[in-house]
Image 1 (cartoon, one colour):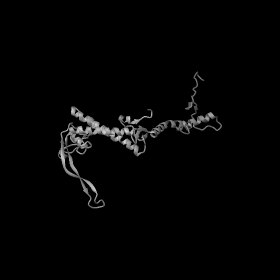
Image 2 (cartoon, one colour):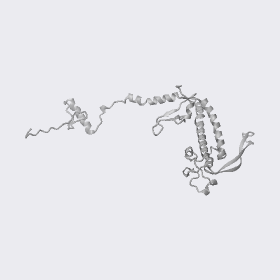
Image 3 (cartoon, one colour):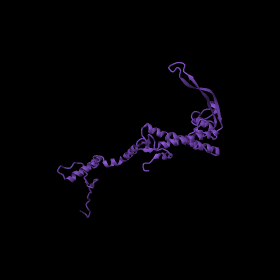
Amino acid sequence: MAGGQAALVEEPRRGLDGQRAYPTDEPADEGGDREQRRDDAERYRLRHHRPDRRRRPRRPDVRNLLLQGADLLVLQDMEYNGIKFDKEKALKEAETLKEELEQLKTELSKLLGPINFNSGDQLSVALFGGAYEVERRHDEQLVYKSGPRKGQEYTRSVLDGVDVITCLGYFRPDPKNELAKTKGKPDHELVHNTRYYSTAADVLGQLPAKTNVQKVILTKLRRIAYIEKLVGTYLEAFPRLLEERNWGEYIHGQFNQVVARTGRLSSSGPNMQNAPGELDKYLVSRYV
């Protein structure tokens, strides 16, 4: 050290493992020690941004695969074991509900007229006003006079006439719920000057019920829709499914992991996730 100044010593660069990394790219001499060969390899890897494959496992972690696949085994057991369904109780309840259904339709017909509740157009007219046509028919018994079925009887429906039923309606319709068959058409092109509106459950649920009559109508319509879905989709459909697939007393629904686009778990054949709570009393637990 001259003139009282300390000599500057260059601090060697360090690699990722804390060892020295020399600033040269020349490979180490064959006679160099093991430490320098390792430093050269580390420096070369850093210079060319190559990952250190030596630190990666040569095969997947079997334990992680087993852990991630555990839910598949659980779902497989759920599908195979199934859940017991009391079909005798369900069919008996279905008959009781169908009697209630007919009673509700009879009571509503006194307010809405003799409409066909399976016809959305007639229900729309009864609720929002307008007119609809009803055909009057009778059946005739006839006999085939020729052909391979000669001499056999058959029934033919004969049209007697058409009645036009006019309704004043009980609710003011929302124009955005008008059906495509009449939406945008001028009044002079409409049949009986009638526009048709949706009678879906969500639409009926938004109708304001200000009078007692309106409340009664909406309450009975919601009850009718609920009974029809419960009976048609579950109480009568599940026993029929058990017989068709020879499942005995157990329903073996499928649980899907890669069907829904959002990645959630879904169910099919039959769908056991969207079943109403009313269905629980027909499902028999194994823990009781």
